[in-house]
Length: 489
Image 1 (cartoon, rainbow, N blue to C red):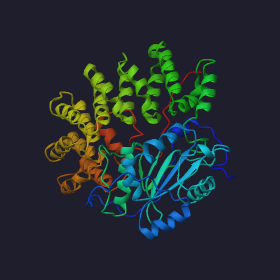
Image 2: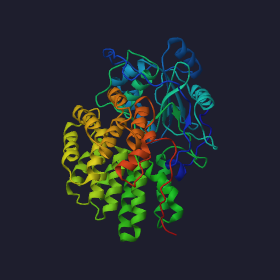
Image 3: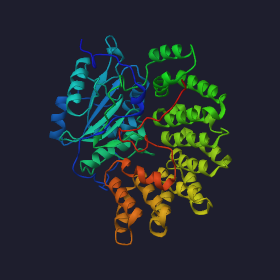
Image 4: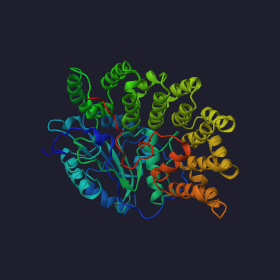
């Protein structure tokens, strides 16, 4: 029996956080941003899986359809969730019907029966498909490790269109499938799911490559987590435990959440002396934690230290899940520190995507807030709320009526929300009257709307927002600096 891949691995702290250079596998042209959309395709059919990746490539070119490659690991929480959330979701049937679908999953000997139902795909197919994907598109590190789970959409010619490592919800899958069709110029596309949105860790025409010291590229399996937590409970965490902290935070498991909740509580006894450790860990949570960690962030959202509240707000923005909305609303209402309020308003937008009420709150702040930094970040926060109509109209109006950083924030917000409907408006702003920093912001934002990655606007957003807190998950590029977290001697 052939196994794919041949060995089990151990996740390394820097790798979960630091994804080494994303490797371009370029498509030459931009996506077709506004191609006409067909009527909704009837739903309900199970996913059709092509067992052989080699055969799928031939079919994709012949039929001029995109190819979807699913990679996962048996027994790992994020991977296991995909079967129900995506592959068994009949609302996504129209998306799967438009692509040639192939699986290449990792499993250990004896785990073959635990593989999701991929139709006629046999264990041997997974091994062959894995090997071909490694050769053609994936960028394994020196240990042969890639990010798992991971989805790749390929063009009929075998070029990378869209890639997304780790978490992927049904709404995000719908957006990615639509984007893949746009990028090959397909006019007849299934109707997007309600609240369809791009995933946080999104790469267009690129794939991620892990650092060479990553030994797993995935969250811990239950038995691995149990063993690690057992060892950690025997003593206090020190600087040598930093990698293990990252492994735990990256794992989508209630036991991991409970352990870290207790650990954060213990660190509170250290007071301000441990502020850097605490704040750095919250920054790390924003970078690596799944949405299930919102409950931990909620517990400490009312912290008595403003810098810690700001770090928690930024973490919630990066996770950007609806479950965090009530947490953010409550915290923003109580917040009195202007620097922290500026972080909370962006988190409000991120957790309230498409929410009309959230859009109204942010528009009011953008219009009437006395503190300039809060105003600018409220405008940026509206980018997360897109495509909500009120947010779009307000931002496009600001692009022509506002000045300075508020105008720049509006332009950046449209790029942040990938509002391709505003592309013509922004193109019309070009000219001698728009120069300097505003001109640079306009240029980079148009690159994003033409099909570029969000990291193109990262430095501009950081400058305009005035925030010193990094958001590497949001401006994902497969390259990040490890937050420097000192756990002591």
